[in-house]
Length: 332
Image (cartoon, rainbow, N blue to C red):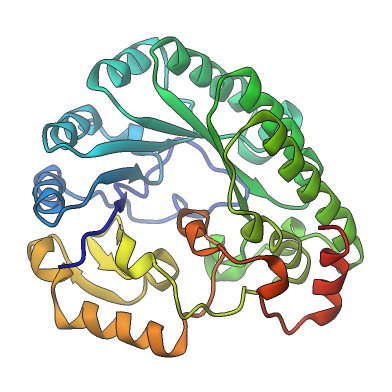
């Protein structure tokens, strides 16, 4: 039986922020996976040999039962990662996360204070930084997640400087995608013009070099090298026939749907509110979609949660935008 490494669970579409580049909480209906069903999922993850669980959202810390669910996951020998905007992590929350033995907390920071607050709300940068400090005092490992877009692509090294200052072990860069916005509306302001692709590539190269200097783990190099093409040309990476996401990860939406991966969220393979996940994981539907992707490749994505798929050098990656590829490759 296939033993996945990680389950990524969108616990809720609720969030206390209204970030400019995210439409997840901008809905008429808020839905959380019921506590009972999350606990059943946790047990099933242990049974199929999954090693870790990521509590994502929305904002997972907005859930009243989050600490209870973390405790349940640890009791089932799962490593626990929390993805958070950091604004709900006060002294009390940090203490609880430390006592429960949370393995990693991933905090969103998008650059300098002015830039971060322009994207996520006034005063949110200081709260995110405070969360990093409080978690460090509680010996909780932290990582930083950073969206890359027109507003902040010149500040990637500043994010790495913050990581070094606060003992952050890893930074994950995620290029903005039109899929983050409902109906793909209001996306132009987040993309960089094609004429600046070499400028973006230079900033990405600086980030790679600084991460190496500071020994900070970031996305694979071949992933990083595709960022300029995504944020300047609004293209998808070439479909990958060897994507490990369908084997190594489990993706669950806030409605309880089990999906092959979040870019394929419209294709439900079953719902944990209706049947146990062990049955879904072993189903013919799951086998079929793995076979389809293996034969024809996926539609392509640059989701940082699946960035381990990028293991080849940039020269080995195909793109129909030869001009763009050449512009980028001159810098690496």
